[in-house]
Image 1: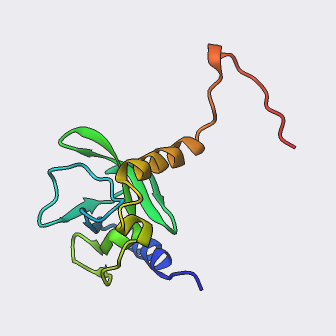
Image 2: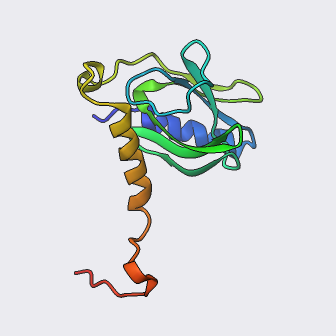
Length: 145
């Protein structure tokens, strides 16, 4: 069976937003593959506001959460693998769920993967959803069979 964590996280997020609360996510900021702005984590953890008004290009998939958010007024692309997510909860009342800490996949734990490569993957996820631009700025047709 597939892991239940991504399904539970999506349900919690939707439940929190539907109840007009602010969804927060607690992240192990120093875990391999995590791409977050430096200097904002405390004790290796970072609390992120996932409110629809605070983030752009939000994607919560089965492997990771990615989005764009501003830190000190500067936009950053964030990428958080599911194993690095420690909790999803409502800021107003603390209701939500804490997750058991998980080990990263062996290839990342051994240093084979790098945050730079994961960051490129996150950027690629965003670019996949946008149509490719044509040189010269002229419109064109693309035949799909």
